[in-house]
Length: 296
Image (tube, rainbow, N blue to C red; front, side, top):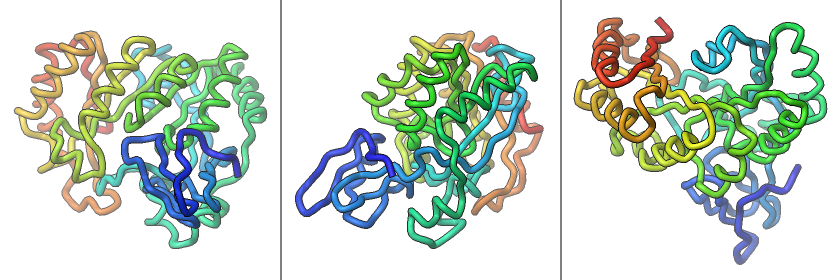
């Protein structure tokens, strides 16, 4: 188990994680909110370093990235765990570890993942170039909580000329974000809502995700996704606020994907009505040049 980055050692073998804004105070033998950063006798360990839950070659548009090397393929990999707790999580089988098993963190990692070294990942991605692969997308769960492996892999992939993509909730502290951005080529950032009370219900804060997007926008290609969840984030007022922020702070050329929700995890509402997506598209198209409807 690799020692994690971005943490403080405290008295009585407690540690404070500094990777994301939760700043988890973690007691010995316990893990943080993400379930995979573990206090091993006063040392914070990254349990999922070199461990993946899945891997497959996808069209780049599936990430979704519609304006970054369109028509190409990208090798998608992920691990387990997340630092948000969305009740409607569409990838809960990998992101929400406690929904899958009550096993202790290290055991859960062994059960739910298999090994893949950075070197082997680079080789695998390189071999797929003949099939149109341009690099690796870190997806399926939250890639920022996989920080140590992500950083090492991104550096190695860049050394071989491959692209690195993140599909992320954007919930990360500024220092680790800035450290890794030089090795990232594109990001799809999932904007859960444009309401801070709603974000807090999901275990996060809107201002953090906005900051991530604004910082990343200075150096990498970004596209945004807003999963439209009935009775949560579909009002015209909230969609208008989101669109205005994108246009004013990121630029009207920034792609915005409105995606259709389907019942998953604890989300029991019916799937988003197609008319809701059409309304969102109409609002966004008044100010943004690249509005995409997805999952329909």
